[in-house]
Length: 443
Image 1 (cartoon, rainbow, N blue to C red):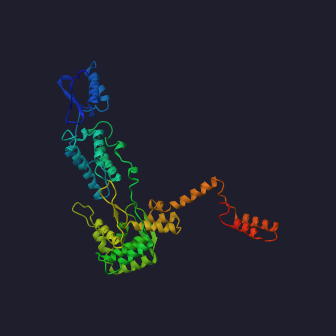
Image 2: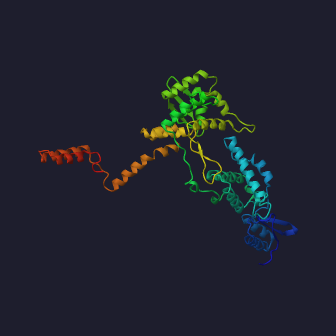
């Protein structure tokens, strides 16, 4: 390799290369080459030398400015400054929940810890110290690290997308495209297709058992009467836990026996007629009415937050519902290979699955179910696939030329013709007539 006019160096061992050279009037400039590979960095530096050897410095500067990635003097934003600036950036993410807001910061801190401290096999104590030093290769290493932490595919992808959003706010500190924009950083859902444990629906018998244990005096639970009403609302409306628990009296019409729900998750409004069992439960709840909530004590527990404003009460109520499910001998969660956390099989959300399952079995049109669950519910697809299967089977039979069954009138005409030509009934004739009139005939 020929010698360079300037000096090629890495600020951090294993990090991206920088090229420093002296230009007009002794001014020294340094350019980030955006690569950790020495040969690639050397070639980029050599290209800069060619440009700088132009007839005049003015031409050289114009040419350098025309090359993407070398239009500014190298700038870097240290990681300890990033979050402070991100919090006030106009393009920052604005999650609806405090929990997700905290998750952005936690994910960023996890990334900074990864690039800042040594791990087995790493040659240096840091991969990068600021935004400008984060290359696609650094992001690939971070994604590989996440795969070793036994988190779900969805969790992995959420972390990458959070980092992508954060880096979108600091484009002036890196060259080229957002290093977290590469699709190879995301994991495929197919990786877990064989491991996914589906949420199970309760049977009618299991729902009866739930109501029995919630009515007896043997099993103890805080605000047990309210939790029983909570389960009944879930059983006969198919709504999510939060929508059921925070149901208010102003959304209940006892006279016309109808409930209105504006779903917290989707913002959709649904209206549901009351089943007699639900009417009885709400009539009982009227006796303890103290504020706008149907289940005031449980709603107060659910709405509890910590010092940072994060909701902590939802987990308390969720644990109560799981406890009830264990009372009838069901284990809510199961271990899954490759994951730290167990996956939920049975929970309050299972009542939503049960609602869809019972509607499908009763022949309730899918559109009617969606008008109750919400039009974007994926649960309906799970329990109404048999409708599509049957339609597909009929389509295949039609292609084979066997799907067209004779009309009732055609069958009658055929039988009358047989009787006309065979005035004397025989056992064989009766068999033939039976075959013609059978519904499966011709299929």
